Every structure is written in structure tokens, then in C-alpha cells.
Length: 346
Image (cartoon, rainbow, N blue to C red; front, side, top):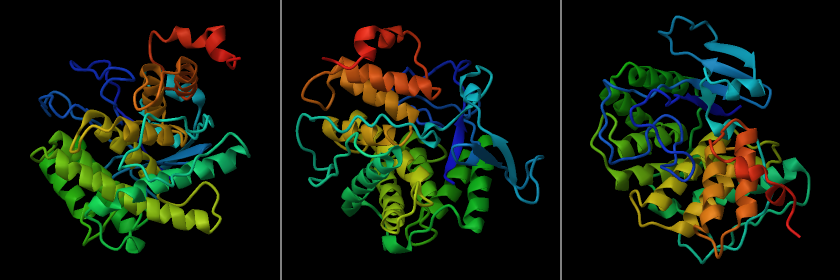
């Protein structure tokens, strides 16, 4: 089961993030690194889950009043949960949606996109298509490995280590209580390539560096840790796919999250030069592995021709609908249901 997070609703926030095509919200951090942060006004809330397509297990820190011996509360996942306004929604990579549209013609090459990148098609079963998209994600994750601070990736540890689980929960508890400095310090320890080398912690520490949560902002260092997370989790997932494991291995959630966040880096120029081609490829790959934020960003790319040879409003509508079907609706997008954008173009 992959890990997930509920992301805090921003309805009451004085600085809500814009919808798709905006700053690319991935869940627990405000993705604008230039926006002044004030933990006393708003501290993003972490909620940790293990999940498959039918159930989810909430993981509570040891100090939480709902903490039990097994640390979990299992409940069925209902599509209505993601649409109810009073509910917090799960991080979108847990939803295994698939657009199965295949990769389009991009506007050029990118040093961040491998030249032998697999090109999934709509052929085959849904499971076969998802395996291809996951292999593509692992190629992207390993493609930038030369710039990462990882140690030997074959020794990467996933979130399944119980001691690491407990430490991550504690870091999340510290974050939610407003102790950002100690929370980030613990994430840094867990992300250390010479220590736990934990992919999930590398994502979280990378985001803390990007946004200055409990530490000085450092976008250049942030992207290194996001690349480390992508490379570590990609290595785990490639081994699982080679072994014939269905639905991937134990690090699929981290891989999808890291790929989406790297797409944000390439789009906005956070710690790297802006790279529209890479941003689109990373967004589209994460979208086809179920990340609804990535679905909206992919739709925005199609709508504006970002990283592509030309705009494609039909495919933009398709990805916007897919995001909406999976609980990530953007207000004012009624045009995506017009007949000419629902029916295949002639």
C-alpha cells in the first residue's frame, strides 16, 4: 500500500493557491517559495495514510489520542468523500485514474527527459498501461540521478521500515504543532543519503527547503533532494516491475509525488532553469499514475501549448474531466463537457 496525505482545504486561507495552471499545489506546502510564511497564521496539516483502491489506513503518531497498538484506523474509500466540502481530500496520487492517452509530440528535447523514454499507448489492459506509465516514471526518476545526493540506490530504504515510519509520524506531529524547525531537522536526518536514505523524507525535506519551513529557503538544494527521492523510489519500483509485481512496489507513492514536484520545479524554475518540455513530461506521467493535481497541470499544459508543439483543447478537457472525476474540480470549467470536447475529434 502506498502512503498518502490529506491536504488542508484552503477555503479559509488569506492566500489560497490558484487552481490548475497556478502554483501547482501538491498537498502540504504552499508552493510559492516567494510568499511570506507565517506559521502562526496557517500551518499545513499532515495526515498520513496507507491506501489501496478500496481501503485506507490512517497512521497516527504515538502521542495522538486515537493512536492504538497497530497505529491504524481502516475505512472504506467513498467517491463522495473527496467531493464533500467539509472533508479533507487525500493526496491525489492515491487515486489510480488513467487517461491512457499516450504521450504527445513535445516541442523539443530536454536534458531532464531520457532519449529512450518509453511511450505508453492506449493498447493493452488498464493494468498493463499503468505498468508502462510507472516504468516511464522510473525512467524520469533515474534520468536525473547524476545530480542527486544519493548513495548506492540499491540500498535505498522505503517507508515500510517501522522505525522510520515512527520517526516520520513524529516529524509530522511536530510540523502540525508548529515546531517547524525540529520537524524539518528530523526530516533532514531521515533523508540523509548516508543514513536512512528514505525517499518519502527526501520529498518532505526537499519541500521544506523549497519553502523555508523551519529552515532557510534553498531551492537548489531542494531539487537535489527531490531528485534523490525520485531516483531512490524509481530504483525500488523498477526492481518490483522486473519481478512481475502488479501495481508496482512499496515506493510507488513517493515516486509519483517526487515526479510531480519535479514537474513544478521545471515549470517554475525552482532550483533549476525553466524547462517546459520536462515539466509537461513529468506532469503527464504523474497524471497517468493517478495524481489529480498533475491531471489539472497536464490539462493546463495542453490548453496553453506549454512544452508542446501546439495547443490541444480536446486533450485539455479530457485531463480536466479526469481530475474532476477523481475529486479535484476546478470551478468555471463547464466548457470541458461540451460535445466537441467530449466526443473524439474527427
